[in-house]
Image (cartoon, rainbow, N blue to C red; front, top):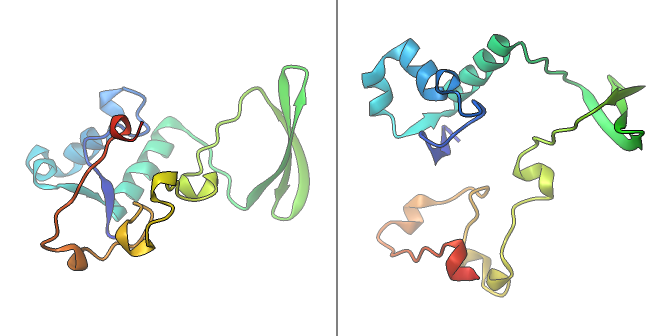
Length: 147
């Protein structure tokens, strides 16, 4: 995938601080006119932005670390980890799971679609053949319509 599927103006990890937004970062590097010209954020630009964001805020990212088990511990959590295959235990006050749609067990398909042939719908996590959709009409249902 060369670009993100979400619009460029959706909030990201900046927590409401405009100076930390993708737009501010992109405009500082390429100018406001360049930002105005893009429709969707490129995958490489998004990775560069996240790298800058992490470095600017001093966020430590650990790789090759697997969470094996979580135990409550008197107002804290005891994390049983494997770091490079070596068991390790750490304690923390808060846990944030930020592992995307794949980490939640996969894409959610509403029950109303369960009996339809898989060729009649797609999830944003799917590889979508846009050429096959050319010229077709679309019905968009929001959360209120499915309630």
